[in-house]
Image 1 (cartoon, chains in turn yellow, orange):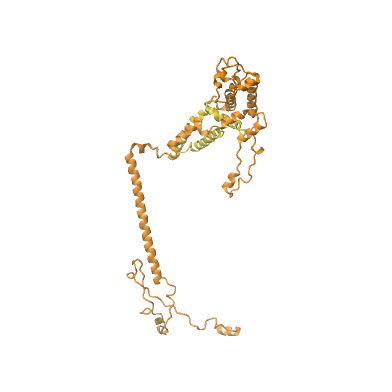
Image 2: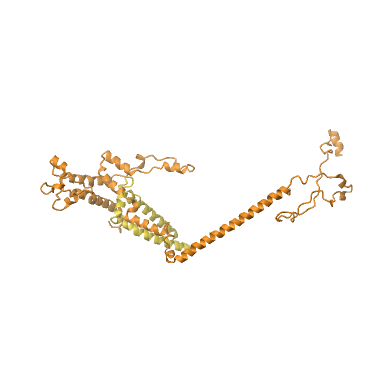
Length: 78
Length: 318
């Protein structure tokens, strides 16, 4: 439970990195890949937005209740 | 929480956590009822409370299987007692203390294998040495040693008993795995729409498999046949190491040099089998005339004729 937020953010970081690498590419397959990655980010954003819902509070609380994480990751991201 | 304001996560998440603790744990203590004897039905009397003379019930807010829901009606709910308010205060203060304290450093109560980066080590051995933070044990220690954060152990126990894929957001991924994941072929909608096509597709796969099997059997039979032929040929002596060692009759040699190397018209070797004689007739052996190898005679070699002395050497050079 306590890893959910971290995994989400790692996935976002990875997708953003791939999008930055593919942003200026003009090859057809790279443009297609960029479009697919963009859709993946939208889908992931949809699920991540539910973290702030009532059920998502459990994941945030689990992240905070981990004595090795607490608010450290939030400070890094915030 | 406001998901649009990402920069305020640092403030929003602690507030949300405190609100969660307040709602889930402190609210129950605020509404713990004070039972009065005249209002209680006789069946709900608690022997321990009666024996001790206390009019407070032994209501356990974490006991979900009890009949205490009846006491949560507005008529029976009293204000928070001093002990309960103290408990709420302790819980919130524990949450505040926990949030304001720095995170635990792993090296304080765990050992990390210094050889983790050894490239050639056994992967199983390396993984067995991985240090995984035991959160449950940390909270157990907090509870046993009555630390300031010990009151939060109930929160930890409730949260970490939830399976991650049972939470709504993660359950979405579990559902999608049924559609896109390992069972995709079984849920393929096109196959379900046309069962005849599906059957034909499977039969085509079986037919291809049978054809491949027959082809492999033919190849194997051919290999076996050729292997047996090769063995027979070797037994006949086609590849022999002794066929060239033949004693040469000196009568074949003539003193005139061109005729000395003239090949004989009649071969002394046993005649080679032609392709017709071979079983299978695949290998054709050309009957090539050979230049006879002449065995060395025990004559004087150059070494034997070497000069014995230097004077003789000079004579020999001159």
